[in-house]
Image (cartoon, rainbow, N blue to C red; front, side, top):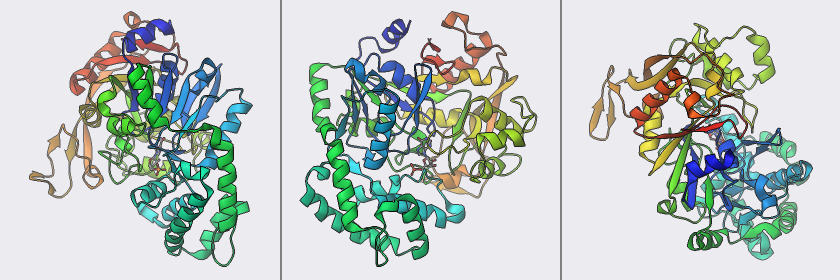
Length: 505
Ligand code: IMP
């Protein structure tokens, strides 16, 4: 069954990419896991331990942050690559590798690009301290040091994985970067810096006002480098060899296109390029090397973690930012939410309660942070923007079973702007204008409300269906509308977490 599906979707291709079409958490992990049964190499090219990719292994859930989702196939000889575009926290990686060992998953063929950027404890501190200080201007980051690590890369003071193998170079570069980090950390309350450093890195505390002991930092990183050394490789070179030799390569995107530093809902984005071009570059390939890209999108709802504009969010249009504030309060968990809203229903007339119910039905709580994900209807204006920007893309719609009991399903097809006059290059947008085209500026999207088309739900469990011919007509109408609006073919749908709950269309 899986073999037929892979044949139908991947056919004769050699280099295939799977990327997120929304704000992350689209269910890419499951698709990559499924496709990695076809691949000889699975490579990640962007992001770091901010990602949380959930895959099912023998009925058990495995949450991966840095290691590519093809790791389950390591035992069959599949090579998994953490590419040069990634930012790697060695401590987080070693913890993940220890978890794999506990779960009986091998990682013998794992390769870590020697050119990937290193995440240092200072990056994690800066990330968290900035967020603490930002008040209402928070990005809602995952606190994994991602933004500061990429900032160092662009600022040309970053350390790279290869430096772990060259102690002298490592120390020299670390000294230079530390000057800059110390200057930045001086902008925060010294007590807050010290407290956080002790909490996160108990063994690394420094003296004389420095959050870290320099010598201990060197010692701990070089020691971790020794443990990772067998995996450090020139993976860009390997990818070139794969391309020349016609090996089957699967690129795994992290986060989602709307979170990308290029073309995302700026400034509420992550720091890496989540586009196909960014993903390909991040593993040492070119965008044009990718023969088929699959953009994964949840349907017919979507989610977002952290702060930032979300025009179709449940409980936004009528009651201000209730959902965003609730989800980002830091106090809500899966359990407390269930106690607070025992009667929440996916058909509730109260949008906020409907959003809570869909979050519960879809188990939409962060794999990395446990935070509740904000929920809203599928925004076709944003999806079309993503697909227009991704060459040769096909869609994979996921988590369809979550809305099995939803009586009415809404698709957003225009953004109605209701702010002050907004100049976009040479165009002027005025209050009341409705655009079917996305404007990727948070300051603009803040004033956008969706215009919806409404469709009847299918009201039948999808999880047990196996082939396209069995799909209810209401569902086919919705899929057809998505295809028509975005001008993109839907290649498959996912109707449950298991591999065999994937249907090719
Ligand atoms: P950062 O990547 O930790 O800097 O966080 C920046 C924004 O991206 C925040 O809104 C995060 O919630 C979001 N983000 C980062 N990684 C993921 C992910 O894997 N899934 C969903 N959201 C993410």
